[in-house]
Image (cartoon, rainbow, N blue to C red; front, top):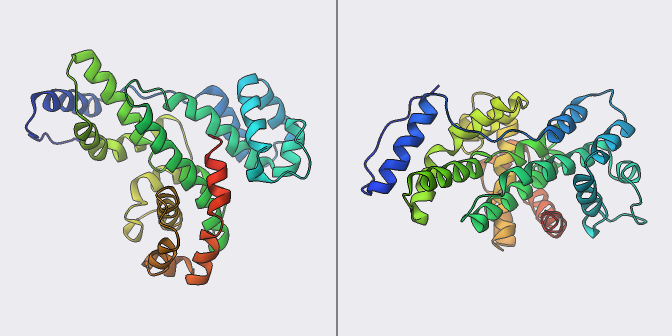
Length: 288
C-alpha cells in the first residue's frame, strides 16, 4: 500500500484529521463502505454472457424499492418508451439488459454513498457528475468505435473515491470533535480520492478496468494500462462538467481541439453530435 506523506497545512483541526486519515490508509484500516449485495449481484449478471433477462428481472424485483426506482427511470421521457413500461421484463425488452443493469447498479450504489451528514449538497453534486460521466462515457465509446460494455461503469466510478473520502473525513471529524471548513474538506478529498477509489475498486472486486480508469483517466495520455478507457472517460467527464455548468457549444470547440479527441478519432462534427445529446443526458441525470 502506498505510504502517504505528512504535510503542515497550518490548522490544528486539519492536521489532526489528516493524520488519522493517513494512519488508517497506511495501516489498511480505512473503513470503506460495502458494496450493496444487490449491486454486486446485478454486476455479476451484467458480465455473465449467459444470464437471461428473466434472471435480471427476478434479481431486481427481489428489492421492491430498487425495482420501483428502476421502473421510474426506465419509464421516464429520457428513454422515450413507445408505450408505458409495465414491468421489469418490459423495461429490459425495451432498453436491453445492459442498460437496465446499469440503472439498477447506479440506484443501488447511490443509496450507500449519498448519506454524508453535513455534506449532502456536495455529495449530490459529485454524484450527478458521476452519473452524467457514465452516460457520456457510453456515448463517447459508441461514437469512437470503442467497446461500450464497461464504459458506463468506468464513468460512474471514475471519481468514486471523492464521496467515500467525504464520508470518512466527516466521520473522523465528528469522532474527534474537530470541525473542518469547506476548503479543508476539499483539500483532503483532492489529496486522497484516487488512492481511496482504487482501494474501493479492489474491495468491491470490480473489473480491473475500473481501477485503471480511477488511477489514469485524468492523465489518460500517460496511462500505462487501459488508455482507451481512460481517454473515453476523460472526454466524458469534461462533457459532463460542461453540461452541468452550461458551457454549451464552447465545450465542443475546446474538446474538439483537445488531443483526446484526435486520439479517439473524433472531429468537431462528431463532438458537436455528442453535445447535441446533452438534453437526453441531463434528463437521465435528473432521475437519480
